[in-house]
Length: 209
Ligand code: URA
Image 1 (cartoon, helix red, strand yellow):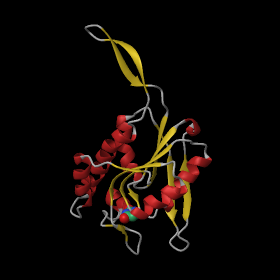
Image 2 (tube, rainbow, N blue to C red):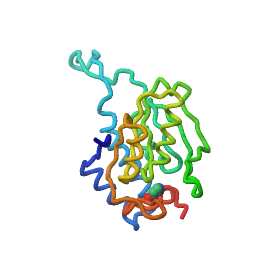
Image 3 (cartoon, rainbow, N blue to C red):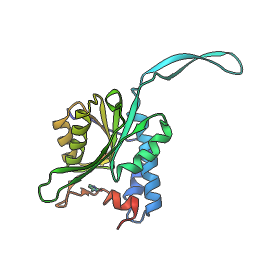
Image 4 (cartoon, helix red, strand yellow):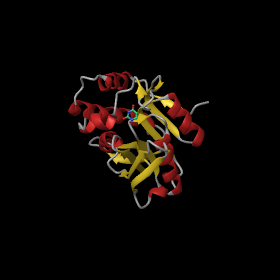
């Protein structure tokens, strides 16, 4: 069985449709990526443990629940993953943020790491990777390799659109990594773009095309 959770909430689906639209401009696209990630994070953090504390309200003492010190880190994959992290750090401001830069060598098709800066205590944290598009899965698998080598035990991968090939590649290499996505599209074209997808997520976020 595949380790993937599709977040079919109407708000997520609506925002993904707006992101797909070729007429959606850079500013709106970036805001939508951030908002969609924020909504998806609600599901991806559903298993955070809680503890009960006593809180004085203006009326009485309430036994109420708070997140019980679970340490989290977000790791956006450069460039596109950055726009997702903008949204989720608003929900979890205590989480630390690492960055990983990887490109896919068009000749060898290997993933090449060009930047990596992780929180110094990353091995004690649960990590949620953010990457808008899970296409071939090569970049995601390499990102997970790096995090596992750094000692991270619990990793989730959050992407907005996935291809069946990407899901299969990540599940095969790392069956323990849960994938959260908003849509699984038809597949990849000969340039490894997701079809129908939303185009080049980095270009659409940063207006570089
Ligand atoms: N990366 C993108 O930005 N878009 C795709 O369709 C695939 C990979």
